[in-house]
Length: 545
Image (cartoon, rainbow, N blue to C red; front, side, top):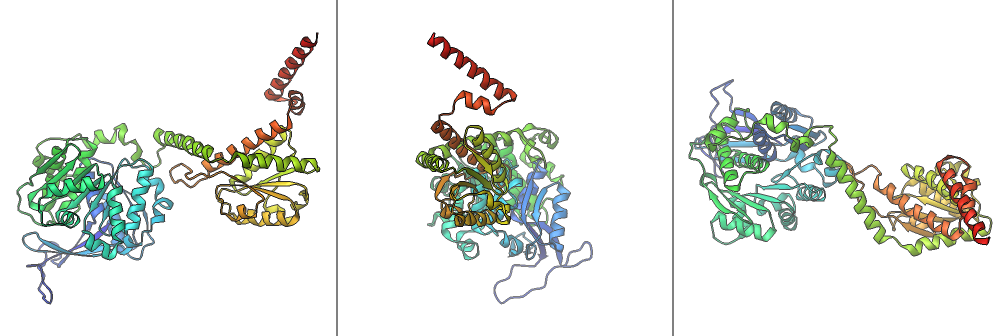
């Protein structure tokens, strides 16, 4: 997202030269024009005029360039999910000569401030609504690019990476060559400039198609597209190897031609066009972009100009907006497939937990609790936040199957509730992170008091685990949901482990139907237990007779 400051110059300068700029003849006649720009925002703009629902996320500043860029997004209906706490909004000084050639000097500003952890923490929900994610190697830190590509891969969203600068330039300011190469491997589809392709492949070969084929083979990409200015583009996929010639035009400004190319390529992918048609559509958008000033489309009329060159029509924007395939782009919508993905993730995480579960630790917990009961001790269950609700449930569950248990309020433990704990008792403390400050403080007091401590946690190296006499591990990597933050699957994991402990304690006690029915005097469970107990008693009497 870059505010492009465009200057018209008689020619592009070499070192130690200076020159007078040409003033613009319209408006106030000044030498500067400010236009919406930026590698990603530009290609999203061209995708938008071709009918796609598009959105952008990231960081900018609450300054005049930022406000200008947001107005440009809103003019075309590009959704945005932005934080305004950057140092300054990104801008570029673009010098254009009469032939349309240009030199660009960029100030990354807030784009450079976007950290990898912000991808999920601040923008995860917005990202998860995407059908396709595009990003760039141009201004973003490479660590941030890789964080986004990994997040997309984890959620099965395909990605397009615009490699706008060669590694020699990128690694000087954006990150390491190792991070650069990793981004190329993580992306589903690569789009590169010829200069970038040559540097990556090496040697003196100028054949863009050979470059594309070599890079696809090296990185395992689904497709690689390389732009070559007035010569068009080359595209390599598993089943395609083609060159698509450019349209012959007299350019006004070549700024953003590659961005327009990529925007139209995204549209072609959305319409599932064959690759020859995608290349032709992308070249048509690049040609239309070169006939205007700047790299961001001036309006939806650009669609007709593109289609006139392309020589065919596309589905209308209205039909796209109503398509069920685009239902996830609407802000606030709760699509069925998001819920389905959550359920699948639950099953996968719990299956992993089952494979990792230490049954010997469960047996040790049973022995510890039974030994405490033999001395007159009992069980207390505690937690903070969502685990507090788990603790209340588990205490009730244990009581219902014969293990005397009570809920212990963690924060109240330091204000007198520690008195309910005897040194012969066992306390079960629940925390996914194992480092919740309030719970760890209570656990320390419990240990000092002399009671035994069982930790249920996903983190073996946590403070709680280090204090505990026994650890029941319940490791969960992903919580599910749009943000992936709210305790969901970790809570299921804690219940999973502790429900298993209740089964083991029930078996160790030898719980009878008569006991269970005596404790459940009402409700359907009590009725079912008494019926089963009566039937069992009747069968026993019949067998004696």
